[in-house]
Length: 621
Image 1: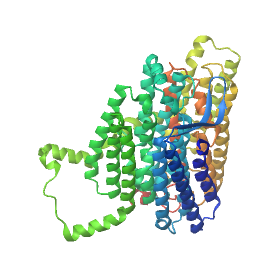
Image 2: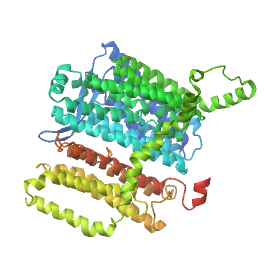
Image 3: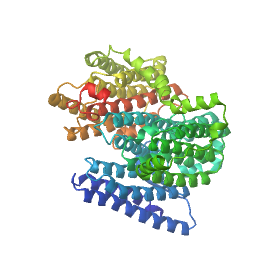
Image 4: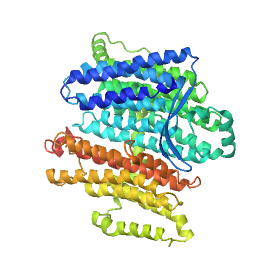
């Protein structure tokens, strides 16, 4: 029976591929394909889990496909089935099936009907890969798919300004979570000297033996996992993104941010629980974070005027409690809590339009104010202060901008000396010269020691300029490509290894970069010069170019469809365990290049169409 586990990947994959080729306007075939796929998945899951329980609920780990292997590193897809997987798989199948049935009528005659079901099936495929994953590499494949499908569904109403802006904001938080997993995989490789599976983490002797001699690396891995989980599950300080994600259709809000996607951070911590359960400092930190999140978001939820925002913050508070349960060692209670919260929030979001109309009627005819509340027992000054703080959502958004994004933008604005001509005429020849000197062994040992950090800093500066670029589209795109090349050259100084690994990484970058650049030049020919200082909304006029450019963007960000995804992990394996500065700089570069690329895509193809909307109307209406 363990060999049947990949069927849970193949069913949604088949449904997704079929949905791609269906006619745009044939709603019946599109919806039947979607809920038919999910109906089959639910039936198979129920039969499989029943059979699994009848056999005593054993833990099944299977090693499937080796995608890359060298003398000291193996990148393979593993699958694991245990009680955590069974709960997440069954809950996900039931809720996605119900939401798909609901969406069939909710989105009737919506222009993006096919796009919605395509993205939902793609999301569910990523969800299944994540929940069935047997190691960090496989989990990261599904993790990335969840991130891009979130971006696409939040910006579903892509002709509007606010959904697109919020989609980019959510993607920026997700990107931080992505890099947390990359750093955790990097440190794990040096801790175990192999690709550790989740099943091996259940061996307490092996875990204890390694953590005894590498306690700092163990704490670092746990912290990176916690950063990724808190970003994905909207825990402090990342809580403000979840209500902004409600800009998408109500069904996607229910399935993503009420039930499944928002609980993936919980899944990550449950899956790695045997690793961090004996690290008392991490458990205290998780408890403190969960408690703070629950208290603050409960207050924020009580003052919300939007029912979807109220549900979002209430869900965050419950997830904070789930984190506390995990930290206290009640992982099975946390799993039960996840299922209950997921069903409740999905129901609340799906009925929220009706509830609002009922409440309006009740308040109009039968309004009775509450005689007393918990806050009435507080001193007046404290009560008013808390009310204002909760009304302002504790300034979570403004703090993120003030201490993270705005400093980056100010730094990027100081780099206006970078132009396309200077990049091609000066920087690229210097990079080629460095490669020639390196291959000729002209650098002494001292130079070789500092070159990785120096070159990676140069790459970070380049992508920082791309992220803050407001005018030249070509410059922003070229800067991202050169950043990746610079990183590859920087890490090649670190140690001698097979150049094939560098070309695996760069092959995806160069192919995606050339395709994307060709799309940009084609748009220049059709539309004239395009600047990045506003949204242009060209997806309706040029849907084919928009699709091809999106594929190029995914390739450049290291999405699983390209060799860049494997290459990034392989490249990271050559950063030594003591080189935290180098790992941090490269990680920050990956954060910024993903943000820069998706920002480029959003500015060109999403938002109000530049031909039908004026700047005045965009700003004031």
